[in-house]
Image 1 (cartoon, rainbow, N blue to C red):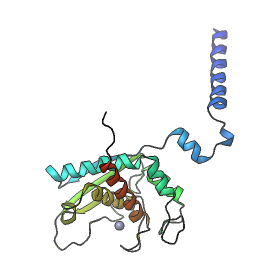
Image 2 (tube, rainbow, N blue to C red; image 1 turned 60 degrees about the horizontal axis):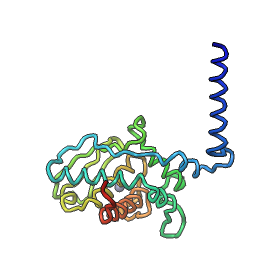
Image 3 (tube, rainbow, N blue to C red; image 1 turned 45 degrees about the vertical axis):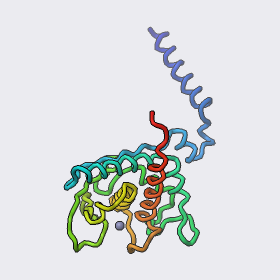
Image 4 (tube, helix red, strand yellow; image 1 turned 90 degrees about the vertical axis):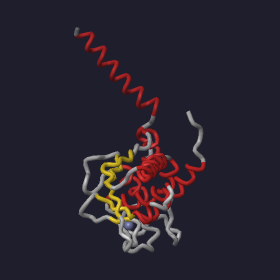
Length: 211
Ligand SMILES: [Zn+2]
């Protein structure tokens, strides 16, 4: 019995040893290599409550969710966020809360909304479609709620990649990022929204092989 316990212990020590020496030399691993070794964290897009959407509008929304999920979990998205340059040519976002591009990418992929920190790995979307001809914004939210209001006037004419961009923009507000005006295109909500818009459009035009 004693021998048996000993051999298990030896085996586990040995396997740990060979794991760390053969697979990766931990002392020389940079953070970036480590994350690609461990895999980019997977972020799931979840519709938590979808008020006012039905039929074709619900279908459009769900297509936007799946394209959004497809592109955010790619190496290209990671690279585009990390290598983002503002119009001055600096590798940083405006209104970045003092955070580097790398830190912003990590916060995004963590998926912890300011008001819902306990659901990492998820883009939790609480959406409500509203119809008000006087409203001139595509969507809006406030820092006090997870609810994102979506303007029907724009939503009904938007293509899937534009819906995905708008959802991403609003969701980055839920992560605590803002912009000084609707012209601050290098802010996190706008810039990442544009990245998603371009990547979804590209993905829709190149759907890839169907298995
Ligand atoms: Zn905004």
